[in-house]
Each structure stands twice: as structure tokens, then as C-alpha cells.
Image (tube, rainbow, N blue to C red; front, side, top):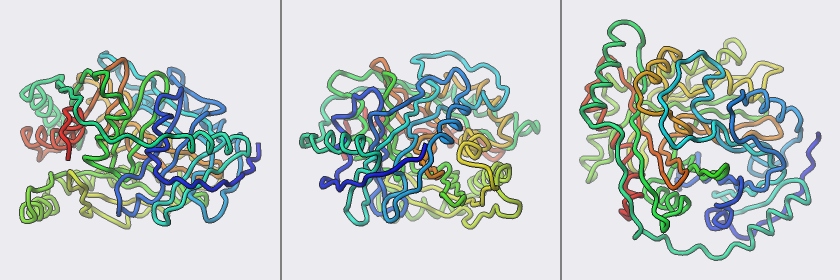
Length: 441
């Protein structure tokens, strides 16, 4: 099917306000570049009213994704944001079981769909650099989406009074004991690094719907790859700072793995000291280098020989709540391969599994207290022109059946200190826990 596009100007440019009435749709996606000033925060997107969808994923979803992408072909309109129709949504971490043989995870509710993907004939796109917005897509779908967005009432002031407290599955002592077990595996030569997460759960009061929780999260810790995705009677709210994979229509690939974290300081001097400590940390630099190498290996499975490079290694990037070390890996896809091939070669993200990836995933399944669900999977878009942009599903609250589920993890190496790794998970979870508790900025 060749996709022909209509372009409609959209006079209102607040994507969050326009999306609010869609937050209870059967399936709708807000990809929200919430981190103002970040070079990766230029574009935001809204997609609703899919013409097809996949919610579930007990069966292997990768063939469906590949077939759906092959069935749609269309060049992007020049000069507009790159996602102009195609597939959007999320893929849960446990879809890795369709790519590798893994032991069963411990069962713990709520149970989330393994995937939530929609096929969209129209997309609203927002260019935060120019302050412009459009709806692009098939004519009828584009007019319908534009009409729905322009009917959105003013966004009410963000409410902070409704509160709830999250409870950890494990005590600090129990979680640190699991970290010690990972270190033992590393010293035995089983694995070089593994990312171990702990889970928090909270009951959501009626006065704190998931979209309000998302608005609180983005107010406290805006991320360049923030998102709110609703469907299948559950919601994903994320303020992720990490790109998993991007693929341009000409086949250029980029991954931006994050490994290494420090909290922000209480004043400028402490903040600078924490950043300098991270940059100088042998443990964090080793952790980042191992995942950089893993991503190079993953990309080499589908990229042209000699094209995979690492133009940025362990650079300091600063976000509202944390400092991170970030590397960049690039490559050029081999002819005849596309977005679905790239995703299958690299999923789930190496930065949230470990190295070697398969053994790290086996250790994760053994030690973590619950399935990861959407956490540590990926979300974003696959365009009709062959392009793709996906984020790593970290810094998320996954909501279902009146519950919010939060995970936070840390990369464990032979140099890890269990107490420090525990503290790192609390730093990462802190903005989401604060959003649940109603701690306004």
C-alpha cells in the first residue's frame, strides 16, 4: 500500500494539552519531547484512532511488525518532523523470549500485555524549535485527528494533592543480597555485567489518574524521550532520557546507551563534584564500555561491515534529576534489511540487560522479584518511509487495575558496592516516587 499524505496546519502547539482528552482512548500515543533545550527534544507526536493494532504479544509479535511495515510504503514530506504515519507504541522486555531461550520469570501482578502497537494513518507532529505543528496523513484520518485535537479544552492546572506511597518488593538488605549474588556470578566468570532491578508498587487513588501522574513526572524530571501510551486497559507513563535505536530512511543507525549515574547536587559546588566523580569512576566507565561494545556487536549483525563506529564514548550528560555517562554507536544498515531486522538484532536493550546479554538475562530472570513488563523494553515509532526512533523504557510508571508499577535498576560489575548500587536505584526512582507522593517542584 502506497501512503499518500495530506498536511494540515495545527494552530495549537501544546502537545500535552491536546492529548489530554485522548488519555482514555482504546489506543493512543503521546511521544513527548519534554526536556526543553535538549537537542533530542525537538519533536513530539500524537497518534490516535489506529487502523490496526497488536495488543498482547503471547505469540511472536516480530513477524506482525515486519509484515505491517512491508505493507505500508510512503516517502516523508520534506521539511516536516520525520514521523508522518506508521506504527507506534511499546514492546515489553519479555518479548526477548521470542528471540532467546530464557527461564520463566517469577509471576507477580498486575500482568501487562507484552506489546501494545497501533498502525496509524495520521500523526500530529510538533516542532519545538520553530513552534509549529501539523497533522500529516491520509486525508480523512488527518482531518479527524485534527478535529479531535482542536476540540480539546484548556488543560487544567496540575493537581498535586492526591497522593499515594509506593512499597518496594524487597527490603534494602534483600536487594543488596541479590546484588552480592550477581557479583559472585561475575567473579565466577559467568557474566561481565548484569543490570538488576527492584520493583515498587502503589495503589492509585481515583483522584490520581495515570495521565495526571505522567504530568507530575514530566514536571519533576522532564526527559527527551518522555511518553504516555494508553491502551489494553493499561497505561505507560515515561520520562526516559535514553534513546535505544534510531534508524533514518537512508539506513543510518544510532544507539545512545546510558551507563553510569550520579544524583544532582544540592548546590552548584556539590553538583559539579558529583559530575566529576562520575566522569572519574573506574566502575562506571567500565560499565559503560562493556555496554558500548555489546551495542557495537548487536549493530554489526545488521549493519555493513566496517560501518559500526563509536563517535562518542562515556560523555557526561546532565538531566534534571541525575548525571549520566552516555556513549553513541552508529552504523549503516545492510541493503535489504529494515527496522524490524534492526530491532530483532538488538532487543532488549543492552544497557538494561548486561554482557553477555543472554547470560545476563538468565540471571535477571533468576533474581528479580517480578516480571519487568514494559520496563526495559522499548517504545516509539516506525515510519512508513522505513525510519524508526525508539527509547529505552526506563523511568516509567506502568499502570493497570488501579496500580502503578515502578522499576529501577543498576548495572552490577565486579567493582560494585551493593549499598551504592541500591542507592543508585533509589536515585533513579525518586522523581516517580515523588510524583506519586505529590511532592511538587
